[in-house]
Image 1: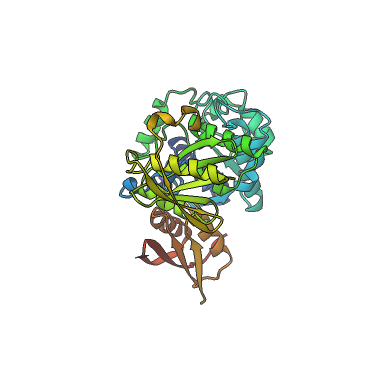
Image 2: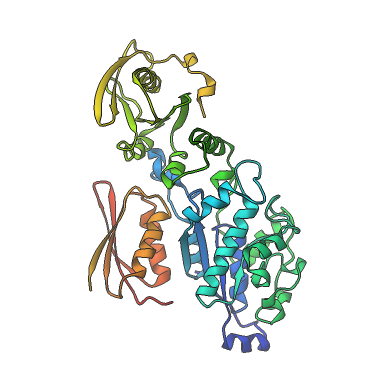
Length: 362
Length: 78
């Protein structure tokens, strides 16, 4: 745990510390939010972290599911970061509330289905609500001007402050010197001179600050911290919405989009086919909710059929499933189909590789 | 002291932590809660959350592919 050195805090700040101010910091688990919180701790602020789970957060779910990744160490980066900082972290389930953010983004989507600006406003708003309910004084984020093309620009910073309701109780320590003074700065709760003027996508200032604080291990997410920025994931979610005719989803829906191959051979059903043992085990947990297919004569994947299917559809689904079994080159593969509680054994000819149209893959 | 069980099976990180956090809010200091999970990540995350909030993990077991994390509720600060 990192020790906090308060010996260089000036006298007027020490007086304020007699009535210690309290900040709630959004902690993603990445370096910027860690540094923002650390900057506040350095100024004698009592900091507690908050982290929101939308269902789309990249938290090693694929690794948790896949058998080959079981040996990898797993940690929740936000919890890990908070523990390094020596602060408490509150993780809040916002899965239901987030649906409106995702399905009706006022500011639109980024490159894929990422409603980054609405998302940031929502999360700061939730943090502000938590702040008022828990007697805290202000909200801190690790936002850096120019870091992200949609949500972290100089012109969007005031939008987030305004739309979240946090107003000038929202402090961004890493870019504060490039922004108008907030109330925590004006009131002397924090010393603006000891805040930063980080700007742009260059990470060197953050890395230097991390090194100065002895922070050497931190998450470096590749491709962001949200599945909605991922083109493949966004395509699967778009398919789900198109088929349903509305932008509705439940947690199980969005978790299943992270697992297996997804193929839609017919408009009225799709197949989710496990790619390895861990995924098969995970899909097994859903076998009562879906029609389930499993090769019997050969080793092969578990497949879930999502949608409606008549006999010819089940034959086709069994042939696709057989294609991904070890009997892919056999004349016939036996596949058990559990449909509405009834098990039927089908002998099917596996599809050849070139018989599965590319368009079936979602 | 009362003993409770929390079923967090099939939930992936951070849901087992969120369920544990929400369950403990309704318990009294000294109560025991056994959290049953299938995500191995929970064996790191729940103890980490407990350390920072003043609760004690008194046992962690693996039974038939399930992880049982036993937590004693500490003095809950606001």
